[in-house]
Image (cartoon, rainbow, N blue to C red; front, side, top):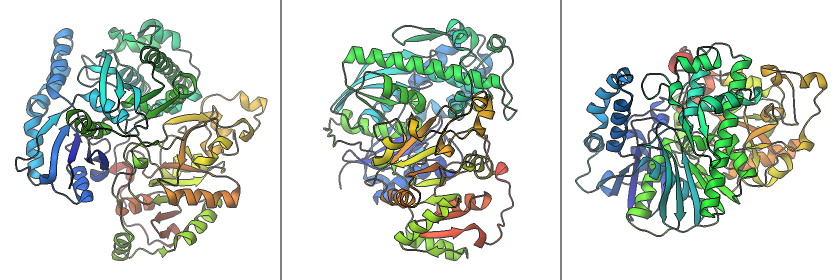
Length: 612
């Protein structure tokens, strides 16, 4: 049967489970996809059950179960922080302690209790623990294409580490150095996420998307007051401006005074100031990441770099790393946040704890990140018939050619096929797609489909062999973790009057032949499609290119604002009917909105999901 290892991340945010067999990734999923609670931190019972079901095994068949964190070390950091900042941290202390003393401090007992509730361990599988950044580093290096590489992990905070550097070699990871709490690039970025009115641990990508609308006017203010940044990229924060060590907010009054106003209220209108602040902290973040990378390259002499941790989801910084650092190539774990810790913990046990060898095959081991549940045509047809939902069942060629015409006419399509993605990005298994050439597509998708802020850009998805023709990017980008600029010859001329636009008004200008996915600075968060991992979507792009001459579509996640990406056919149909999508594809079934019965669920989606 082989050796199965189950990795678990839980109790902070983005809980997940991952299953490997003889070192090969079998399944991985976030709990939020099953419970429909975004960033669900609870024990990932549903994700575990899915992994076991996919493998056709029970818990009794698991050789090792591993948790991605060492709670006692984290508790030590919590206590030392409160003691250091006493009495200022008392409010935060009395809020956190009951949860720790009831649940997190005795996490081994909690995990055993939860696992036994799923079917019982029968005393067979020992429960192991990795350190938080060890799990991140393992998730970055072990599935990577590189036999040897430097590894950087950057996030908010693990037990103590906020930034860590590792040397990966074969089946070993050697820790080199780290920066510890409270000095954290991730928490610095989150502080500005909070200050600009977005939700911490959820809205950081909005801040990144807002940055191109602004000017980096506050860079010097940040570097002179908030951050002591050294030439080698290491840093210290001036904690007099932050409250995350002592209070219930990220920033304090001194921070507000520095920037001349209190934090923006969530959902209130965005002003040019927030855009300029976003541009400034994004510029500072990129500078820190680039300096750290140059130092790591100089110290280790590696040609390759692997990244994980929440900051590794900053695809603008990643793009600059790829273009400007001295590394020949970089690889980023697609589930770079805490969810990926479940996978990293399992791989760490296989390679480091059990000392099993590791082989590379010229590509990564993530299988396109398509590691979640799939639903057979039989299951989908049965469900559609039970619900008396009208549909067409088509052969693949007929379906794809019909979709090419549907997309060319400006329709928005929900796309549901194969195994669900692992990680925060929809990668054309659970996606909403449209024509990237359509000038209205960006606003239509934002306001009528996703119900989200108008400034937020959409990602292009393109055949991997056509990427150089359309983007200034010479490599694959299968996980939508690199930002690249649109090629000059694909750009449209911008008049002198249009160049004077500021802020959100920049949105009104079509800047390329694919305006729906071209941000106001000509950048795009790029996803390449490969026939080896997603052959059907590659064929769809090919059909669309034959019709239009353009191998690019819009790809955004199949959900509305605040909702986790859809998992099941039921989730997909509900989202389809609640929004302005025109068509839904589930495997070989095509559903037209105009033919659907009246939607009976009158609940407003805003009441179903908390805004992110």
